[in-house]
Structures are given as structure tokens and as C-alpha cells.
Image 1 (cartoon, rainbow, N blue to C red):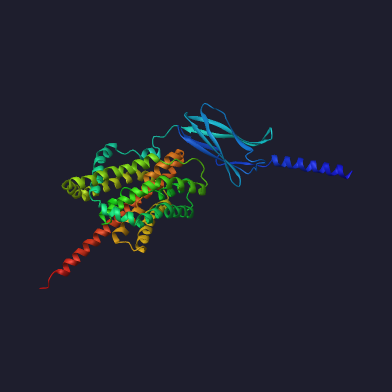
Image 2 (cartoon, rainbow, N blue to C red):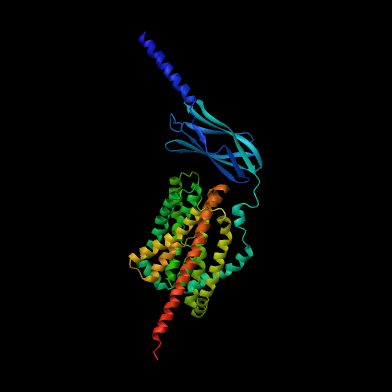
Length: 437
């Protein structure tokens, strides 16, 4: 009798447990209404508290009301403490539809519906003419085509100033390059991550700042190194080396910090853009080195135009950066603007401090600081635009533009202070050397 009673109680307990389980809410979704633009991809994050009975036994099924308007690119399962799913949707038509999300579990040969979310509304709108990123990128292409030959000529002139002896010295004592690489690819991304967490920025925006922090040195670095009397040869070598290292370090940092931020998906590294950036620096500079060796008189002529040409190009570059970035500044918060100003300041401070502690010469200290603080922010922009849906890309793209504008402003202030101080010293020296009547 007691045995039968035990079996009845056990069956009742199991039945009640299964009945209670069916009423538990396993699925949660970020938003019940998804709004995105035509010919773009949108990502939905579905979180589940359901525990698989067998490894990877549960899966997500997406049922579309209008398959012609909306299609599922893929459904990715993320395993952590809970089971999360990422749904990538894409459409080519304008309209409105619904979708149903179902969580299933395969128990042996049987499949059981765990839970479903119905009537998730999807609205697809026509691409707006005033889309933030598109509007910001309306640069007069004629201006770019006019200044492109001047940029190449300027890089060729920089090649004429390169001293091959410096290359040999750096090859034997590569400490400046090591300091720059550690600052750019390890210290700066970590500081960027900490600051975005302190300021509680959205995940996409935080990722934008971290990617900007892990960018290699920008082409303007050796330009500023020239104007503040740094080591130009070292600056060019550091720019090329960091751009080459970016092929490895940018994918590694994007993987590490995207996981730390909880972002899922495939992040596309613009290998072609990084390679073309490297070639865009190397080819004209190499031409300048050849001119210096074979035709020294023409090399001297090119060296004379470096400063005025650099000043013109720097002014045009800052103007164009502001022209693009002002579209983003209309939407940024005070925290974002503060972080945009902090990033180049930290890079400059870290680079100069490490070089000074290492007792490197003053021109080298200036160069390491500039190469650590002036970043090629547009590589981060390329990663963001390739990796996110348009809405998230617009949010994340604020970071590289804000950093680029703040870098230009800070370097202009440093340059003006440096020139003013140098002028003051010259005036004081002349005054001291004037004989008393």
C-alpha cells in the first residue's frame, strides 16, 4: 500500500512540476517593436532562462507573417550562464509585418515547444534623406580630388627628409616603437573600456570608442612631429609599424572587448583599408627617399615646401573633419564629448611619460607622444560601418568623429603654445644679447 502511495505521489509531483514549468516565462526580447530602414540589417537579441536538458538541445524558430517582405539571415545561439539567441533580419521592401518567435527543445526523437512570443511588430521605413551618417558623408568630392595630388606630394617631400641612419638606430634600439605599440594596442583600449563603463555609455557607443582607441597612429602624426620639431623619420616608421600591427591587434581587440561588452555578431576588420593606408604612406615616401639619393637638388626643393604645404593640408583636414563631425555633435551628450577629449589627451600623456621615464631624447619623446595620441580614427569608422546595422552604426560612429575633432583641436593648441613659447624664448635671448648703452 505504501509503495503504491509513493508512486502516486511521485507521479503527482512530476506532473505538477511539468505543469508549473509550462507557465514559467523563459523568453524575453529587447523590444516588441522593431523599426529599421530598407536594405539594412537589424539584430534582435532574445534572452532565455531555459536550461537545456541535453547539450544544445534547445533552438529558436522564427515564423514570418510575410516572407516576401522580411527574411531571416541567421539565428545564432550564444552559450553562457543562460541561453541567448541573436536573430539577424533583412528586408528590401517597405511595409509592416509581424513575426513569431518560438523556443523548442528536442528530447530524443520528440520536439517540445517551450514558449513563444507572438506578434512582434516590424516596421520597415524608406531610407531617410537626412540619415545621420549619409548626411555627414556628403563631402565635396572635387575638393578631395584637388588635394589628393598635394597629399601625395607632401608625403614624397617627407620621404626626402628621412635619414637612413635613423632607421639603423631604431632597428638596433626599437624601444620607441615598442612603447608606442604597447600604448596604442594595449593600454589605450583598456582605458577606453574603463572610461565607457564609468560613464555608462550604450554598448554600441562604448565599442566605437574602444575601437577608436585601438587604432594605429594617423597620417597626421609625422606632420605634427615636423611642426613641433620631433623626429620625423621615427614618426613615419612608427606610423607604418603600427598600421602593420593593426592587422593583428584590431581583430584581437575587437573580439576581446565585444565579448566583454556583451555584443554578439561577426565583426569585420577592413583589411583592404588598412593595407591601402599602409601603401598610401609607403609608396610616396619611398619615392621621396629615391629622389633624395639620385637627385639631391630636387629633394632640397621638396623639403622647402614641406612646412607651408603641411600647414595647408592640416587646415583642410581639420575643416573636413569638423564638417563631417558637426552632424554627430548635434546628438552627442556631455559624457561623449568629455571622453572624446580624454582619448587623445591620455595617448599624448602616456606616450610622453613612458618616453621620458625611459630617458629618450626630447625629439623622440615628442614623437612617441604624438604617435600615441593622434589615431587613425577612420579605420574604426570602417569597422563600425561594416559590423553593425545602420541604427547602431550611427550611434557608434560618434566616437571616431568626436576623437578626430578633439585630436585636431588639442594638437592645434599644443602647436600654438609651442610656437608662442619658442618665439618668447627668441625674444628673450635677443634682449639679453643687446649690449647696454
